[in-house]
Image 1 (cartoon, rainbow, N blue to C red):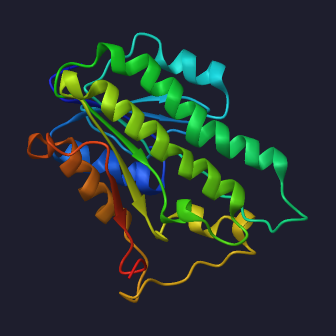
Image 2 (cartoon, rainbow, N blue to C red; image 1 turned 180 degrees about the vertical axis):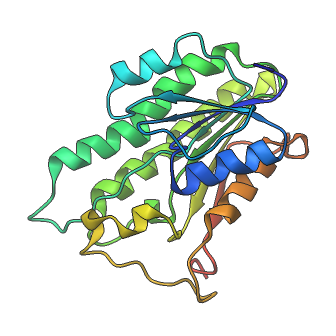
Length: 226
């Protein structure tokens, strides 16, 4: 595989992760997708490695022999319960997928990244806190500490690390039964964020023109923060 521009993208089988993989392929990247199920993506530039990001051993196996110039951690899951009925097992899974998997991915891939490498983590506007979504918000909020710490550590090598945090995005996760008690509100622009809009932002952060942007949280909220 051509290592000139090779991105590892988690959650590539659907939603934002799939949109990112497709956008990077269209931009001429080589892409390796990590996900439990195989994406509906074909082409010479794409490879898939099955991985359950909730299982560290599965993720370790998928990373064997893998190197990259960019890492995009887009895999995620939702859980929404009020206090008194928190699903602690699902909360632990969210922490594993959002935080621990990010740490494992960066720990294995960053040391061999070339100068000018890129890391982008997918956060959420909900990281600031939202009623009924405490487990989810906590796991996404932790990504700020990870990304800013790694940005400071990797800056001398010319590797940037950023967080992209969308508001409610039109993906299958939005229709997850686990969030039935927490219906998303439309942003002021009158529609949900499109996965392709998130993918375009990630593609820019991976480009040479974004070399001076690091340690930042790019919020795509459709005016929800106003």
